[in-house]
Image (cartoon, rainbow, N blue to C red; front, side, top):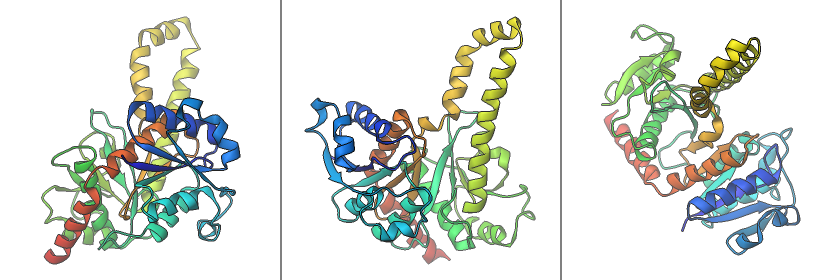
Length: 331
């Protein structure tokens, strides 16, 4: 049975939705939850019938959003530090946290360590598309300044994740650029293009619109571009929802139309809701760390835990090490 360490205290909404999401996940899939936080604040939130199913690890401190990622390394009594240490010590297979994302990434990278051959781990996210298959984008914030070798490894790690976790046998890998032509891009992307050109599933440069049209399974970029892309996408989705609601109220005809289209709106809402995907995996470390949204509700936590279980039960880390070793031989 997989052991999943859960940072109960880190989320913006407090421990309640984190524990509710954990219980929902436990009801649907077997695993051993390790709840990390102030026991006096969280134990009463667990239904009595589940108390013997979970393990509590006390953490007296909570890392605040105002703290820097480097502060996380010094504050060893925080819930996120102790949750990561459980993975480092082999007592947990994965850590899930809706807390300080920078701290989670820094702690996981430095305390758990990187996979053999990995220069920099990357944080990835699943993006909805116009088709039934989502696209997988990395890096979306862990590395704002990248060299060509970093982006090349992101492509390898992203391809491995999509194959092993999303079960897409021949994922199409694209390099995000300002045009599809070979002449486009900057000096770094041009170097990456040459390196990835020998990869069987590399389809070349892709543009921003290709992230959402279903034409590409893995989109590679640096963390600066990727984070802006992620935040912009979230903002657009929220704005579209508000615009629709605002205009629906303007006339009886619009209200009638909305009622007829409510099933379509429900599907759209599900596709753009981050809670459906749970969290963002940090890929390239010796274990599994899932960074959940700070405002995660119970559904988001449940799906973040499911991500952690799927990741931990797969051979993705072994596949990444093998692919990177092969690339180094080929270059």
